[in-house]
Amino acid sequence: MNHSIQVVGAGLLGTSVGLALSRTQWSVWIADADRGAERLAVELGAGTAGWSPVDPDVVLLCVPPSAMAGAMEQAFRLYPSSTISDVASVKTEPQRHAQRLGHSERFVGGHPMAGRERSGAVAAQADLFDARPWAICPNGVAGPDRVALVEQLARDCGADPLIVDAHRHDAAVARVSHLPQVAASAVAGQLKSAESVAMELAGQGLRDTVRIAASDPLLWTEILTANAAALAPLVGRLADELAAVARALTQAVGDGQGVIGTPVLESRDVDKTIQSFLDKGLEGFTRIPGKHGAPATTYTVVPVVIPDEPGALARLFATVAKAGSSVEDIALEHSPGHPVGIIELSVRPAEAAVLVQALHDDGWSSH
Image (cartoon, rainbow, N blue to C red; front, side, top):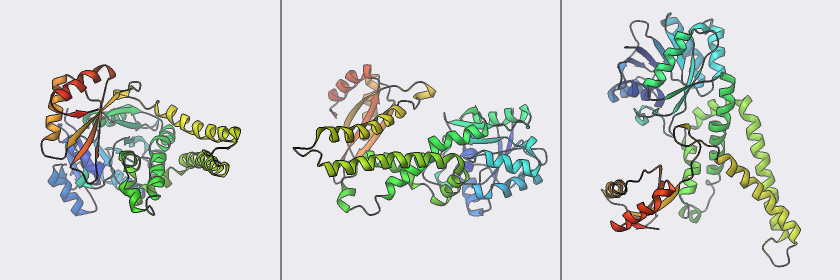
């Protein structure tokens, strides 16, 4: 069945929705107050510029939190029969907007759990939502047909729709999305005054930890503030736990830990505090689901030295394919000042030995 959608906002998510739906039978219009962004989205193939001349099936609001109320009021006024949805990362606030405007029966909030640290239409991808959760938060007033329509939109974008209450959603994303943003920015902020030698020694672990700190500070200020009620206790708890680690480390310095003659009991108390903190982190890490929502799986990491030259990755993956291995994850680390890098291939333990042998047979250096 053909559907139509009006996308409001030609940023990363709005343009990506248009690109994703270009693979389907949806008719897409895309509008933005910034006509340059709108033109770019259209040139990329995200839809027809401007506003739909008739009521579309769905109006999808892809605007920053500060613009949500105004965009929603405009959508309800322009299209009196359309289902209105959004992609905001906080869901209780848009529901309140719809209620204040007297149109809760036409609003079905949504939040695709997908994004990038880059923003704008230039960063959009047609596959941005593929196999990603798309939270859908019915308000109890909108009819089931409208909820089903937003679910269909999520599926047609490649996502996996998940029905969840708005309050539960906001509490969940505070923990799994907003708190990581705060933590990444906190670590990255310490790099501002780092000596140059520290940056020269930086490895993939640092890059993995701080990647999302490159996100737009203005947008994230709005997001974090909008979810302050759910986020504040989590940030406070994290601060308390880090403060306990800081006290333990300070105690270690005062005790001369690692120096002959250090009192054993004091050293053990310090170690116990730090290890407890790290153990808790490991336990939390193991709760992150594996592929397709399955329980987390332990993989064997096979590191391979790879030259920084055209065609190297293609040759490597030809060897992987020949070995019959299924690569579950990839990490690539460049060696500063050297024409080679290390690529880490995560495979199932049973496949590791066969893969390593195939790599050696084809002349790859693997350890």
